[in-house]
Image 1: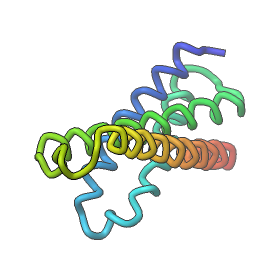
Image 2: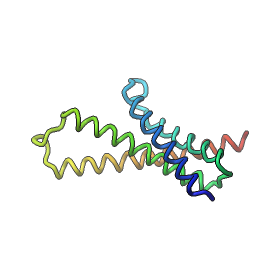
Image 3: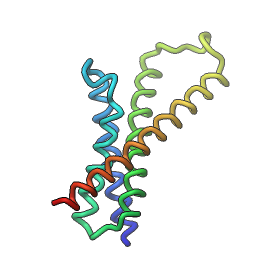
Length: 132
């Protein structure tokens, strides 16, 4: 089992997909179904795993969850950075505690949704490879 290869594949799949989710969220067609793009993180990670070594089923699940979680976090981080830099939220709108709580909840939701869809993407890639 190659933990180093698994983490490298998850990082590449997660970061690439996190940026793509943010880019595609601005398009009207993909804005409402951008969660489906998290599937791509699992697929990319599954592909990269098969290039490095012969992964087990557990490796697909773990790396899919990692890449999806990373993709969710990256897209949330870039999105929050844009909101904070644009100045649309000021300190007079909400107090600091409530803002931190909302940011934390948003990050957790993005990570959990990304991880769930990343696992599904990795499983779909594994099934597709098996049939091939």
